[in-house]
Amino acid sequence: MPKAGMTELQQRIDEVRREAYAAGYATAMQVISDATSRPPPKAGTTAAAPGRRRQGRARRSTPESKPPRARRTGASATTRPSANGRAQRGTNALIIEEILKAMAPSAVRPAEIRKALQDNGVAISFPSIHHAMRQLEARNAAEQVGDSKSWRHRDGVA
Image 1 (cartoon, one colour):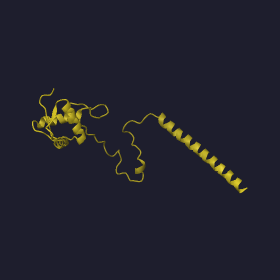
Image 2 (cartoon, rainbow, N blue to C red; image 1 turned 180 degrees about the vertical axis):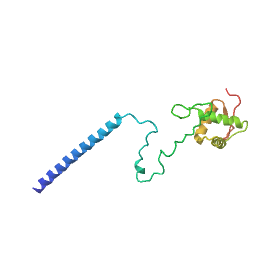
Image 3 (tube, rainbow, N blue to C red; image 1 turned 135 degrees about the vertical axis):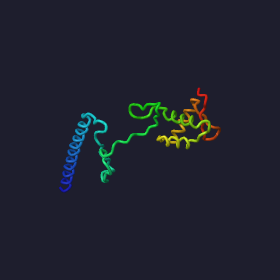
Image 4 (spheres, one colour; image 1 turned 180 degrees about the horizontal axis):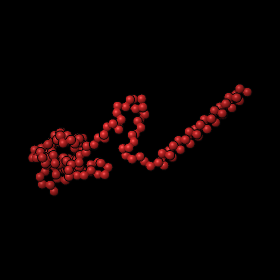
């Protein structure tokens, strides 16, 4: 008899769990359906909810109290950023070519190029500088000086 009572109790517990799961699932599906049926909010009008990690921490400032910062891109006066605000492809190479022209005929190392970029308010990583230099080399706009890591502008651009 006690075994039959335990089996019946276990069956009732399982039934309650199934009902609770079904109710929770239905509620979650309704929330998802409601969220997808609404039009998306306009950019910049609502603040995103803080992530799980930040729930317990005090916020230092609200997004409404600070004006949005402008992103620094590598765009120069000759190039125009695309619709999404990012610089166009090849902008890094154009900027670096201008720096090489300004420092011609002497050879320039990537660290000097990066310093000149930072003086102009542009931050580019060393791998990006190297990639741009290879692009310029392919266009015959720059050449590597011997086996060194120095580069110079090539006058006869083909």
